[in-house]
Amino acid sequence: MILRTPEERFVNLPDYPFAPHYAFVDDLRIHYVAEGPANGPVVLLLHGEPSWSYLYRKMIPVLAAAGYRVIAPDLLGFGKSDKLSDRSAYSYKLHVSIVSGLIRQLDLRDITLFCQDWGGLLGLRSVAEMPERFARIIAGNTALPEAPSPFAQIAYPLFRFAVAARKYIGGELNIEAVISEPRPSRAFLNWVAFSQVCHDFPIGKFIDSATTSALTPEVLAAYDAPFPDESYKAAARAFPLLVTSNLAENHDAWERVLRKWNKPFLTTFSDSDPLTRGLERVFQKRIPGAKGQPHVIIQKAGHYLQEDKGEEIADIMIGFIRDTKPVG
Figure 1 (cartoon, rainbow, N blue to C red):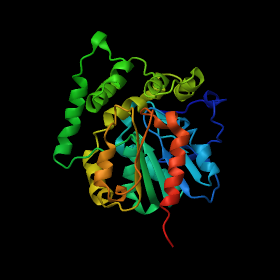
Figure 2: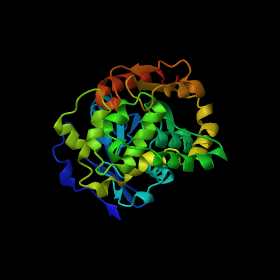
Figure 3: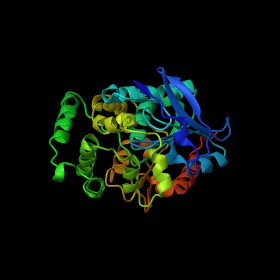
């Protein structure tokens, strides 16, 4: 069944005055923000789990004022986009298809991609599908896990077994234990396990726990707005368990495109994210276009660095685009 969040849930959200835009991809309605001049250079902002384009509300006005055409979609199952009520209906491949289909339908070209969390797992796969449409990439607090076959074929069931085998004090792992774990691999496993067993998936509360700034009740309500009840949260619960489900396809993306990517690639990871700490070095080491770039660690920012330091990141993006324009 396809669910569509009632529009009244999105009325008067703080600092989110953007007019809605919709496209149908694979017969599913996908929402996106489109701000700035229609003929401006394209900046594509891809959010992750379990947020939506509201996460980019601090960056969109800065980028639009600088003359960029800013496109910020809501992934399938999030924000104002359609939601599938059946958790098993979601797959990594379906999400890639939706993102790539939207890019083609809007005919986006010479794209500057900013991707965070699942925005990277999906955006980088779209780059591999159509590298000619992308001019540069900026990655923050994300990854593209990969493995060749046959290991990729056994990694996913082993991962699911590891999640199922987690033990919980009092029957449930709390958010604080997830985000306070200093070891990235354990923090990630805790998060996946929590997303599968918690009775009420607290979207806004989790985002608040993964930022360095304290979110107001109004902002927390905005992050919760797309999800009137648990039936709307199937995508949010499905995403964590899908991370290792496409390792072979991701390996192909690395080998065909990303390890040969000579266009500019910048990392803007944060200093206070236990989930992706240190993963920026993977991109810096493996992607040719990352060499010699002014990579930055965003200070005093958590996993959702757009929430903590959105305006600062937008300024970094503007400088990066300016300094990496093609000559001639």
